[in-house]
Amino acid sequence: MRTPPSLLSDPDYNPNRLLDEVLAQLSLKNDAALSRSLGVSPPILSKVRHRRMPVAAWMIIQIHDATEMSIDEIRALLGVPVARRQRPAAAE
Image (tube, helix red, strand yellow):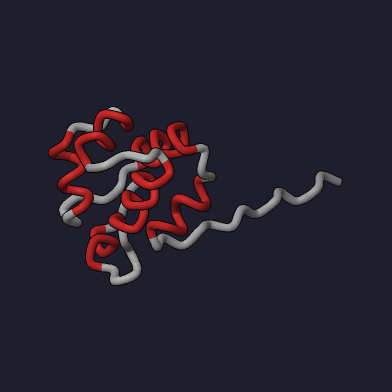
């Protein structure tokens, strides 16, 4: 998933809302515990929290695996529009 550079400057994009929700769901006290739980290095988590790096697809999957939140729910917490899937046309 390629992230447009404008995402980091988008006022609706809010990685802190997502990370805080994950902290709460996993009953963790701080980002150090969160980084261990997600298998993410603390500097990466810090860059995400300070909007110097977007939440990557692999991190969304890690969050999904740890919390069982749906990908759509994770994207909504991030403030990223949830893509609507088009069903393929029925074969004739």
